[in-house]
Amino acid sequence: MAHRANTSTRDGTLNARALVVAVETRDRAESIDAELAEFEALAEAAGASVLQSVVQRRDRVDPATLVGSGKAREIAQLAEELHASLVLVLNDLRPRQRKNLEKLIPLPIVDRTMLILDVFARHARSREGKLQVELAQLRYRQSNLIGVGADLSRLGGGIGTRGPGETKLEVDRRRIAARISLLNRLLGDVRRQRAVRRSAPHRERLVALVGYTNVGKSSLLNALARSDAYVADRPFATLDPTIRRVYLKPGLSIRMADTVGFITDLPADLVNAFRATLEELRDAELLLHVLDASSAQWQRQSRAVEAILHELELDRTPRLRIFNKSDLRIAEVPESDALYVSAKTGAGLDALRAAIVDSLV
Ligand SMILES: Nc1nc2c(ncn2[C@@H]2O[C@H](COP(=O)(O)OP(=O)(O)OP(=O)(O)O)[C@@H](O)[C@H]2O)c(=O)[nH]1
Ligand SMILES: [Mg+2]
Image 1 (cartoon, protein in one colour):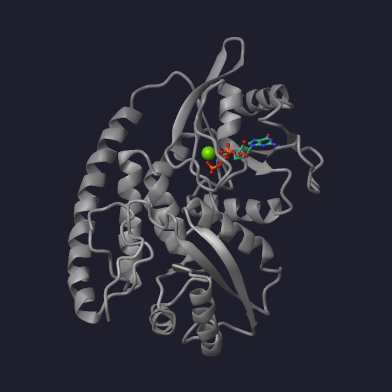
Image 2: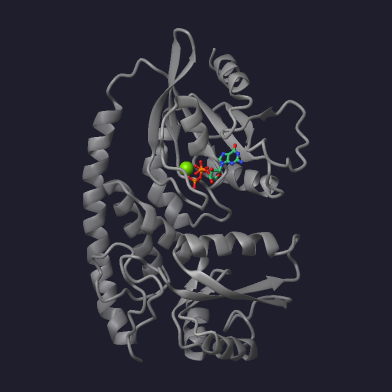
């Protein structure tokens, strides 16, 4: 089988013409629509344009090919008609399913975890962030028997790369293992340096913003700190932790940390990769859990965030729930004592500052 590098460039899936494929199993509690929309936003954040989405409803996923094999052939034909260059699969793929699908569909096949990793790879700025993402990508490839692109050293290299032949995979395996141990060493160095910086005494207490991706955490930090951290209307705009000073009242200022946004089923490799960065959260005395009041999905998103905070063993840190984007149409929010704010208009920010002061005493 020919080894195709496809779009494995520094830009990842940039300019890729993607066909989205999803299986909706009948045992799902909710419709797949919201997740599909979120997946399409991820695709766009990875630089791909979504041509069409194909959803197959089944009792369960096909263990051999995810979708039925007839459906897979249909998808191959549709991909050809639409001149697609990439197939994005919402469900996570087992190695066997990926391999079988690749036989039926002659295009790179990328699942949700790989896509999220690709978005991270494209947007990481700090050295530590880049190293962490590359490590997570390689670990995912290693555990899913996916080969890498021709240029292993390239960050984000290989997303959408087709599975190579067996011999190639054997060689790749050794190169991946070697690269992984190098990355671990480099990360160790970076982290030691950061630990030194972190142990420098601070007079001001630390409060951290956490929440689902795209809810407005960075915007809120900017509104409170009158700063200009990077804000964008796409998932995972922030990957590197940022800390700003925020004045709460005369004589009292704190340090406020912005963090990477969370997402439903955040790949375990990524949680692990970012565990060190998220460790800053351990020093926080208070977590501000930011929710998007305008999203009908805020409860699902809130559950995902709570699950990840639990995984990070942060359940015991006091928490304030804040509904942002209250300038927009507000989705039903059954919490009577909720804090409503708008990073955009500044509404509710005085009350938020006061609530933070109260929570810190
Ligand atoms: N209407 C409205 N839009 C907002 C508000 N706050 C943020 N936004 C918009 O929401 C989008 C996401 O904002 P960010 O601040 O980047 O969100 P984030 O939570 O930091 O996102 P990630 O870093 O990707 O996790 C941007 O387009 C913002 O302009 C708000 O209060 N009202
Ligand atoms: Mg952000």
